[in-house]
Amino acid sequence: MHRGHDHYHASGGGLPQPAVASVGHSRLNSPARLAQWQVVHDDPEPGSSEKQGAVTDLDLVEAAFVDGFLAAGDPTSFLRLARVPFRATAHDGTKVALLRIEIDSIADVGAITPHLGGETFRYDPLPAPMVSRRRCLRFIYFDGTRLHPLGLADVMVLAPE
Image (cartoon, rainbow, N blue to C red; front, side):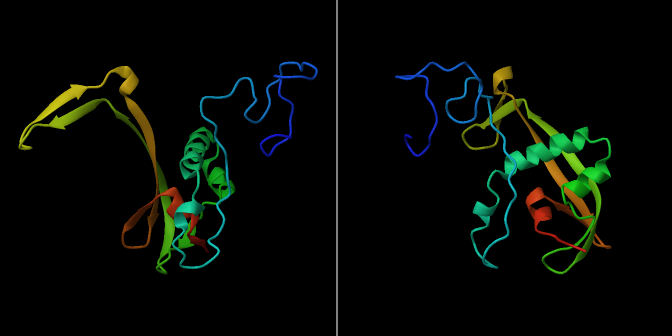
């Protein structure tokens, strides 16, 4: 055992082990970015200001949701499995119903720099390695009067009916 965990390291003494992909810091072929799915637990104290810690890795969960939703043959069943409420009560008591899910694909391909004084600017197209791509996920709920665009974190705290 070393540094709080117990497993074999190929360096040092002992018998050599075959090259096998494994979990942990000793794995041979690690992916570029690890993703994990976590269940976000309820806040232990109502009204607590520690909401930020409760949504750890939400960006990874949201990316997994988008990929799964786009690949789903039955989007309605996917939403049920993901526990997205079709009818819910918002934190202010408003009854809402899910109308649609919007997923925008965004690519930033240029940058601007304001000149002194701020009335003009310089525009530069970005080279391919600097182009950023992202997806924006919104759940559109309706309360009978107006639309409510909500993010995944907002949907996760809705009270289903």
